[in-house]
Amino acid sequence: MKLSPAFLATAFLAFTSSAVAFPEYLARGFNIYPSSAATDTPLQAAFRKKVAEVKAGGDVFERRANTTRRNENEEYPRTIFSLLNPEAFDYNERDQYIDLTSDQHKFIAPGPRDIRGPCPGLNLLANHNYLPRNGVTTVAQAIDAINRVFGVEVELSTALSVYAAVFNGNVLDTTWSIGGPYTPTGIAGGVLDLAGGAEPQGISAHNVYEGDASIVREDYYQPGANNDNVHLNIQLFKELLELGGNDTTVGKDVYTSDLMLKHKSIRWEQSVQRNPLFYNSPFGGLIVTTAAERFVAEFAANNTAGPDGKNFIYLDEPNLLAFFGVTKHADGTLEYKPGQERLLPSWHRRPLAAQFGLGDIVLTLLNAAKTNPHLLSIGGNAGKVNTFTGVDVGDLTGGLYNTQTLLADPAALSCYLYQGFESALPSVLGNLYKVVDDALSLLNKNYNPVWHKAATANGNPCKSYQANLEKQSAKYPGSKVGNK
Ligand code: HEM
Image (cartoon, rainbow, N blue to C red; front, top):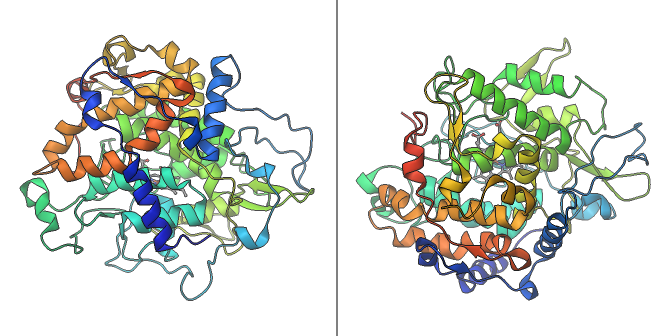
């Protein structure tokens, strides 16, 4: 599905019209007005239904017993599926085809001046020219690419892309880089909007989008890592393969959501044990690194026809290797080529209707926290390994929530996450921009509405609180924002 510029403009305007009053969150005690079910997308409706089920004691994920074979390869362990389950839809070769081989979209390794960063998804989109090959994108280009190639719901791709432009890019021309610093060229003088005339730092900047306990990248402050939070660490990658039993069966669904969420918990504990300055930042740590584990299982996965003609989603070793830019030689040795992530020519996207959205991310976090409650903590080590303490949820929310209430209600969890950042925004943005109005207005129009929907799903009274995250974070020595 190609989104036309007209569609994108309409989508942008749609967000603009569903504005959420930003300053409301800054005063304690307001209810954020619940959203109406009438304007739900199919995914939001599915989330609303799931909220009611979980509150009534149901499972976070509808776990399917693997009584039926999902393709000709024996048994498959995937039991966690997204809200709009890709296996509920017929496989459609034509609709799910993505051009990865034409002159326009064939893989080309980045040149010396092209920017690449810590996100394999974005790197490969640039390598296949779905994002500009130079690694600098606009908000609209990223929304289109992520939705079209991976089936990320437009609301979520918009929120992800706008957040990158605001915190790692330039709000005046809406550009951002998928790696390190760059010079915006869109609007003359745009860069001057940033405090100190600084260049935008790109998504590699530590503790903004990028965080600790990543899948196969070391922590920025980890001893021995040389502040490299961008390149894949081959030892960590080998450990991921080991978790998958080093299973090389082609077409087998080895790297499932179940496996990747278990992996998240392992990586979190490793960071506590290895990095004295480990810090689980509110956005990059808590949300992005956990969501990224799920992204592997959902988006690196290939899709094909199952025995019954339904879509079969699976992630086997060849697709995993390509996604992470790793080549396996005939003698079994692994070689990582930085920035050379790709999709195999046989790769197909998930069904058009099985979009993946913010509700799926919230459920992923909820499931992760139920498996290992630490994963919901904002906090860090105190300068020595194994000294992790988290900010108490009750302290952060003025007693509105505690961990138990968050684990029992996906809408309450969304409300907590949403406001945790929102109340901190004006001061954070004040450090970044000379004038914060443009940045706030972009977030207000394009980032807040999707969170607002999730936070008030099923009539949840999302009460506002003043989180004062900056003050809470300051006590952790690894919480410093940005690269040296
Ligand atoms: C606007 C959209 C996106 C932005 C701004 C973004 C940004 C990032 C950032 C900053 C990281 C580093 C996080 C860390 O410290 O571990 C990251 C990691 C990751 N992202 Fe993305 N991402 C986006 C979309 C996607 C998509 C669509 C996919 C999947 C196709 C994806 C897959 C991943 C994975 C698997 C990692 C973990 C890499 C690792 O730790 O080895 N991302 N992303």
